Length: 486
Image (cartoon, rainbow, N blue to C red; front, side, top):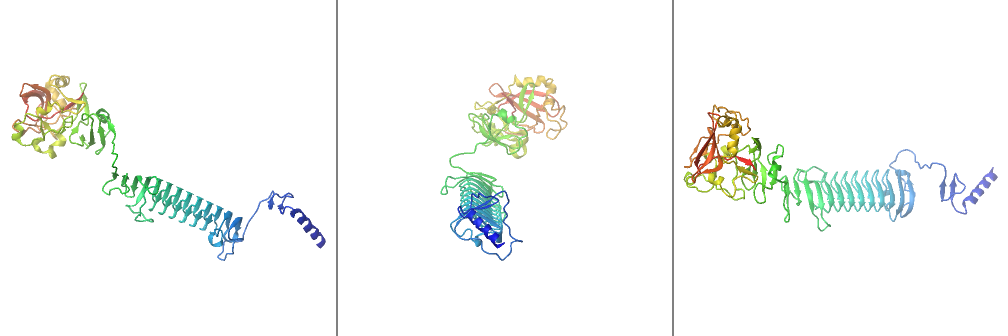
């Protein structure tokens, strides 16, 4: 038996000695160890214990190493102590060049990567994942917050559960996300808890570390900053620039009329509401108000093929932008020979929203244009005549034009059906002496037609009958104005 064993040993030496290769399952090994047609098992008994021996080898070198005491695996090259016992985490994996996986269940792959946080992952070049459950991917990225993620180039996610992506971005606070390039850096109130003054989302648009800037910032309180890293706390949206402005949607008056159910506060630039270039407008829940003052018709109704505004005019500027004087003093009103307006009883709080303004006829006839662009006032012999005749004649047309009920009209508001949709209201008038009369009883509307040097034609609706009446009166009186679309 001893002789047989000796012969076998000599034979094996003869097979392996020339190439120094060992074959298992093959007689022609092509590597130092060649296993053919079989699985390979590296195992260790039981779970990891507190008493752990040294790895099979420490220090620098190229190797593929199974470290059973920590159930860890290494493959690649290190030039230092990256794969020594104290740099190897339990159940960890590292591969590449100087890849260090020190945390529990950590993974490091690539070149000079470090995964020191428990359950962390670091891949790429010179990445570092030091926070629990952190991930660093790319080139020189750092994920130091718990549950943080840093991706791209030179990004840093130091807030817990933060994310930094792109080039040179930094996410410093709890749950913050930074994308883009070189966003502005700051010191947050908290890296581990929700603070309303800290950032939630930031888009960087800087060009390098010495030229950081932000395209947009959203704070955790919902405040948004565009062009500023510190949006004002009193503003939901803070836009800052010294070279550019804010441009709202631009549309014509006809396009504006197609907006369905505009909400109060809606803002547009109306391109043809005020000549020559338009005007910024906001909807106040009732009408469109020019930012520089006054309103333009916000709703329309088609009556006898004519498109009328459904509310009385309430502008305080002519079409070209010039202001219309507001005259409250009765003596000054009586002396007027130029355009002016007022509110009934000089009380805009009570009367403006319902009845609009009262204008003298000099404002109606001013060459600068009282009606907004795209609109005009009805003439005495055309539009007013047409609406009266097509609604059944002047004796009943007023009823079809009056708002129903007695919310605004004095009882009995005879004949009121508002079948036309005109919704005429009893706004009263201001007489030539500056006195206010007839609110609740009569509605007066100027025509664009004068009757001699001192008078002009108007129409009147009455609380006690359903007629529409035609009269002329002194051009100094103040009446309501209703516009038609051109």
